[in-house]
Length: 385
Ligand SMILES: Cc1cc2nc3c(=O)[nH]c(=O)nc-3n(C[C@H](O)[C@H](O)[C@H](O)COP(=O)(O)O)c2cc1C
Image (tube, rainbow, N blue to C red):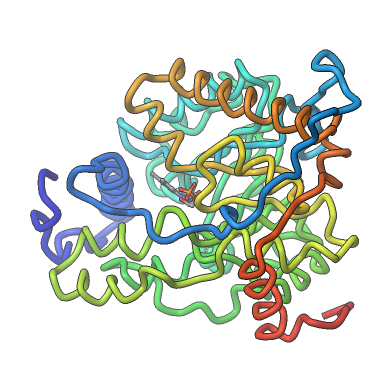
């Protein structure tokens, strides 16, 4: 795809059979990759996370030494070297396969968790199983599979669980992406019953379940409902980064693209969501932050605001595309350097101490957090929602 307008309404992608549908899924995934990678032709990132309005209080005389700093923590019951993970992205196309292998290598080298893209295609085209066999490449770190909430409603759960066993994953992320689906020519249009299906899925699933959005965020009330239902982690996946309405619209007509423009600022910003959850001790350790995180400083801020770990998607797909696993390892190395430095300069020796790190918040950040809490009816402590 060389220009944004080279694709029509994708009428040719309509499924005729399992194989045709599997091929359509593979084509869609490779188009997503092309759009996310071609910065010259496609603008897929919009507005900000709000984290720029938060800063650490610098300590000129920290009572700590560099050798004491530990960035290690735990994820899905496994120890990891940094409180970060590579978010769910690819598989199902040749380019996606290459990217997955590089992402898994980088995760294994640096000791961080790695997700994979939706495994839905595996049930249509089992021959692409290798694209998702990341555990072979990353045996020492948590690897998690991925599936849509609508698929969790429609698919046979036992078949999904069997696939999770074959993939030897440590968890599965279920994505909620109604905005993206509505702009996808063959996307889902009916989201009724997804929560109830999720509850059944979580009850039986042989591995912990993460529930995530894909860039518009999960509000505090829904987060609480999901945690009460037994979800291991909720990944906020808020706005400020990749906007999947824009990505899908680039695959569609000029009219759809014009409509998508109006959703540039849609969703809950990742930083503001974290701020809104901050005073709730009972969510500690079960909230992941992602969506628009682009730096090591973003990770440090997310953790100091209460996130258990910070997820990154777009920066890693671009890194492996530009320079393979090595470039992704370099990027993680940079984030690591920044995180350690922030920890020392704010007097925190461990991730536990960083969670209580001293932050300064601008008045507009505090106001945005208060507005969000009021808007979702979350301004007084709630339980059992
Ligand atoms: C190329 C690409 C493919 C993606 N595919 C999936 C997917 O299959 N399943 C999913 O849950 N999220 C998928 N995502 C969404 C990301 O996991 C993430 O939630 C979103 O892009 C926001 O994070 P970011 O701003 O760091 O990119 C994909 C993202 C990218 C960039």
